Length: 313
Ligand code: UDP
Ligand code: MG
Image (cartoon, rainbow, N blue to C red; front, side, top):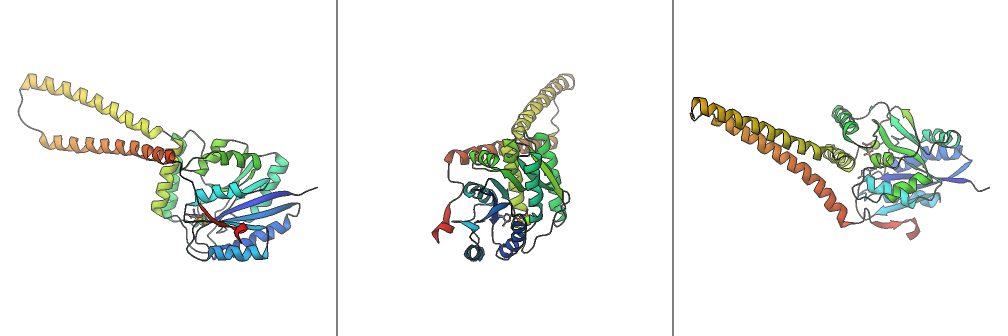
């Protein structure tokens, strides 16, 4: 009987040091799981270092290694989509190349799918050890906010690291949105998911590719993609301020009728003006954010552009 195939999708952006380390560690796991066969798909997301060279070297020594190289940096979300689209496996796992997603969890994930009947087994880190204080703080806030306002479930500490059945992979590929937020998409497509908890690991080498501005825009991406509550909040602000204005008008009319109209209170007027203009711009900004995303979606630009793959060699 033909063995089932597991595809490992590995997005890489400037990871020349980590690629060989990742291969070594994962190779041990692949060897230990001889009941299945493997393919390893490295996605070179426009790296400026020798990542592509490292992938080519590995391809030469092991034909289970495949690679896709983008024409420029399109971001991890695009790299994950490309990997899922190229993967041929009956099961597909997405893994970071920096070994923060321990390959040693794969046998356990596979076992849970085979024996317990899950469609997907995902990893969730119980600590954020290895990340800065501010990153931990803001990530914590982000998950609290998104849990309240989003219409799909987002699990705190969830990583993109997961092993999925082919059916689920196909469902994810079908969501062809341009502004991708995979953690939301995984949850959106449904299927039975088991969560495995693990202690967060330090990066094997190099530094994180997500700085604060990048993470912030990723968080906004997640909120805009999976919730329209911010639009509702701006509408509520509008109604609230109309009500306050209505009460203020009545108070002023009554005051004028009783005590006349001495000119006073322009400093308070300026404060109110600034405050309300701020709120208005804030709400326009929220609407602009949704409009911008809609604008990008309607252009239907490709999510990534491939420059070469292992077939071009
Ligand atoms: N990555 C990518 N494109 C990017 C940024 C990151 O393919 O534009 C890859 C990166 O090489 C790594 C994974 O995504 O394999 C996770 O990135 P990183 O470790 O920097 O994120 P963190 O662990 O800090 O969240
Ligand atoms: Mg990492």
